[in-house]
Length: 584
Image (cartoon, rainbow, N blue to C red; front, side, top):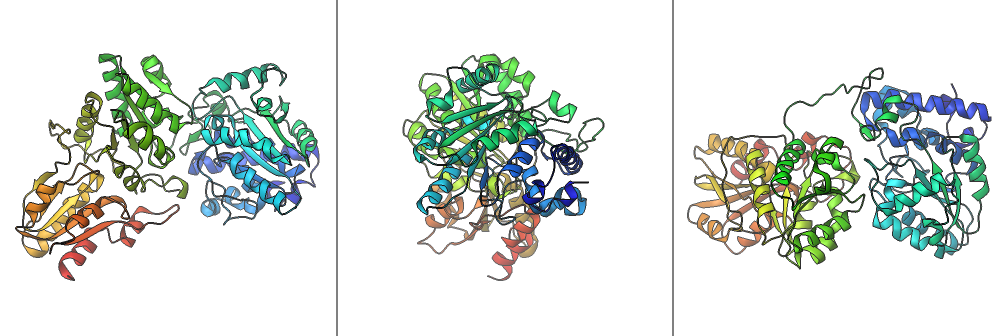
């Protein structure tokens, strides 16, 4: 077995052409075994095996620096740079992350998990090399789906300014997560069909040299192309045509489902972890499909992740023109939604908490200053969301809630979520964001009919004395547990409040608590700095009311266990009671 003997790129260079092809088979076999047990980014990595081998055969990493966009293509790179055990042996599967990480290896230069970044990051490496008058190749790897991102286009536009060695590998498999959208993909298609000879060429238009490799999964052809551009004295694009999911029939036939996949049975391709029951993605999709049929101005917008809100291929076809995938372009999506709303439409844009970070300027300038009634759905905004450091969902509250004119809502259950969503779509006064719960679909059976245009009106769920608990969003259930624990400890029921609004305070209610309460507890599923609890603490700052804010420290955490993070931040009922009642 060749892979077992690969301890670094120098070992790849010792292999013959036939041995390199065997190595590719072994790498796919190792990937298949690991991903069938652990899940992960399947299609992008399977399609880039040969290119990874060719890169390390031709170039001299880490002196020659390879930067992977979004890291979805980096599993093979990790295998060939001293981390093969994490793919060969199950007891080591957890040794490495799913993204490039400089803490793991000198062959990784950035921790990258968001798309469209590699060209800009790598151009910075190249500029520093030139300023220091050093030698060496700098290579940016970027998938075709990532090209629609604004940062990628900005980076490509700048690249020719370097006038020095800079190599951009465009991995073109005619797919983003789902199908590609946008005019530039028509140009990629034309380039593929003309063997790179199409007179209209996006890359040449940006003053970049260009070569095309039709057989992007042919190691020999790739090595030839990479040798051609190695040590080039000017920026050049190598456009390679690969097969997403190559080597595994199910992944090749159903590229969208196999971009990222849960653990599965290798023989059948069927998931071994089947989710049953309701999810907010399917609830949202079903609700919006009904809305679309009732009102032709309702428009669902996604930025390259349609199935995150349940819009599978069949649902997208059913929705027709009322479903828009803008590609990986969240900034455009927010401004686009603002424009639809300004002209009388009813837009809904859904994305992950960690992706909405890209759109701060558009939320502020294009949406909120203009006061247009678009709806933003923020998913995985929680400690219960994705746990990779690049995809943390706990920073959105300070980000979104402090933009003037924005109404940021925090539902506590299924019924409240659907009521808020319905109100947001039908009203025409406010930009609205809704923080989708992430602690499972909790149904109370309540018939919620509330006019959320009565801004910042909190809901008192339980009236008590001495202590009040403001439990925000999907931490409301934690608030219920804390209330019961306090009652047991002091013999009195505390007041329990569902704030509903993240963006403002109910001054009248908060003032009334002063009459018979001595302490207020705030619970929020996000970082404390700049968060909801600080608004409450500031309100009570000049009074005798004691305020206890519970949330998370401002820090980057990676591949964490939820229970450990909750305990580290004293977010268990027992710890809160200890702080507020026992030790005060």
